[in-house]
Amino acid sequence: MALDPIHLQYPMRRHGMDHDRYDWSMLADRPPLRWPGGKPLAVWLNVSLQHFAMNPSAKVKLPGSMTMPHPDLRHFTLRDYGNRVGIWRFLDAFDRFGIRPSFAINAELAQRYPELMAAIRARGDEVLGHSWSMDTPHHGGLDIDAERANVQRSLAVLREASGQPVRGWLSPGKLQSAHTPELLKAEGIEYFADWVNDELPYRFRTAQGELWNLPLATEIEDRFVVMDNLHDEASWAQQVIDAFELLLAEGREQGGRLLTLSLHPWVMGQPHRIKHLETVLAHIAASGEVWQAPPGEILAAFAAQQENA
Amino acid sequence: MSEVADRKADTGHYDYWAYRNRPKIRWPNGARVAFWVAPNIEFYELNPPANPQRAAWPHPGPAVPGYSIRDYGNRVGHMRQMKLLDKYGIRGSISLSTALCEHHPEIIQMCRERDWEFFSHGIYNTRYTYGMSEAQEREMILDSIETIRKHTGRAPAGYLAPALSHSECTLDLFAELGGTYTCDLFHDDQPTPLRVRGGQRFVSVPYSLELNDTIAYVVNKMEPRRYGQIIKDSFDRLYAEGAESGTVMCIPTHNYQVSCPHRLKAFEDALAYITGHSDVWVTTGREIAEHYLANQYDDALADIAAKNASGKGGR
Image (tube, rainbow over all chains, first blue to last red; front, side, top):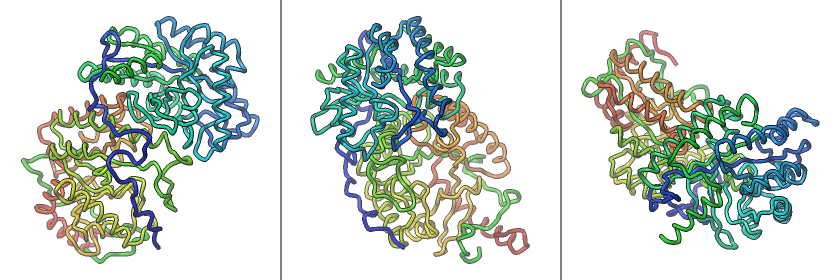
């Protein structure tokens, strides 16, 4: 018994990363960052507006997709609940606390629910691409032409529906194929949020030139904490506030920090959960040391300092 | 101890030896608990060769979610945890993916400056022992030992197999290559002698899976504050029992779990609680192994032999 000799060979064992997508860099080694107004902490809240097909066909199943034999009415409608009911609770809460969120939107949803899309468009909040639906994950091994067509179609529909240039992207499940960065760059995407390896933006290489990765944290995401870890809603809010306070303290000492919150109306939009989201929003709104802004503005503030550095 | 037995049915490394009525363990300065923190500093490869028995990643590559959160540990989490350990006067005992010496020597340098311990956790945490021949596993372990020696000036004393992937002779090989302790066994709250085929003086130093942050957060899906509480509860019990005979408490951590901003506070509360007690020996895995080998090991062997002879021991 023995393994093929390749298992004891290490061709990428070298300084830095074992790939060429980005440079190795430790957060604490970077020059201190300053957010507008001298605030130590920036906060980005992103809402994912998602369509889960009741007849999924993708090879990779994303969290939240159907689990029962067709027709899986219960999971389809529980997800749809977020787009019919939960999102309106979200919007009221954002307005009440003066929050400016962003929305990552499955293009199919923009097409299916014009009233919802019109409301988002009228608010003027930043819109991010979120692929066609939760049944089009950008996983490894995907046919490149099919993936390109998906990216092009999704962005065309979303740009038309939102009236925005749509420069940001969040891949469903944060999955990427080996080609996703190139395909996004080619279609005018300037940043994606998929690689959760940092707390600040950094440059990411593609064959078509660089774009930015602006990580949207998974570990503190509502769906991950409540649906995967099965923590109660009050615990989620407590965890978010603990994160907020830690990053705020670090921001005062070491230069600007960024808290990112990923939200799903089919999770936190339920009547028994919405008050815990409101607790979090109230905590953010009550702080005088926070710059709460959409991701495009956060990235612009960050990038301006990199060029001057 | 008797000769090495069939390792298909049990590990073969130790005899049954009840927790009560053992020779008293005396830690330096009369401490009740030897307390150590073992940060796992790991490197996971984006595209490792596929081990025939265990997949590194759940999806076809690139494994963006799994790879990127582990990279977060090195880019962001390490400094956060190190600062905390500095604050409470704790030297980490690093469970090291030794390729990190090449990938991220900046981290190694900071840990050297703090006199932290480095022990081997294999070369990459995406290279599993499963399916290796004995010669291949020996080559891998030796490579990891020599890498630590080259980059830190001292060979490692301890071993924790990469991703806890073992063969039947993993501990024998590590002992033959000069190691003195392992973290791979979870059978006790005190160090114990281990039987290895070459007869070297070799011990198990209690690590912990129950208090391991990745087990707590990923497998058991704990809330951060409950994790802090189980650490304190473990300590309270081991501190109380340590008045009779010294115990060991280890917190194994991962910089991509414990250092997340929503989790660090609970960990800090636990560290403050533990180091706020007087009779705690805040130490490293190597120092525990060395102290035990020098002061307790022979008494332990004699006690085990006596109990086996009287029919109390067993396999």
